Image (tube, helix red, strand yellow):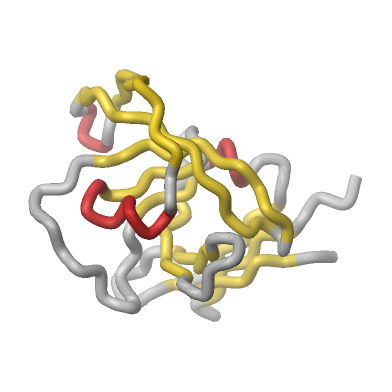
Length: 134
């Protein structure tokens, strides 16, 4: 069974590393089961994904029930060692910043996690997303 393995970081966030096809650069994202889209990346880090931008924005409700309109883009990631097209929401960025190597730059949500099995073991500090073999 194929797996994506991550960890629980020092701030108790479940994180995994994502890679862009044909790129050596990878980046961390937080696994967020309260986010029902595929991927949300902070505006200041969006250039890392080599996105195709659309003239499209959608209304979303963020944590704390704040409503925002976010731009939508499309990119590709390696998902279970295969290239996969993903919808990327571009989240608000208060100011340009450089992400630290161990700092997540966005969220991965349930639209990408489904239909896989997600295991978060806080005691072992381990995150595993298992590919559904059906």
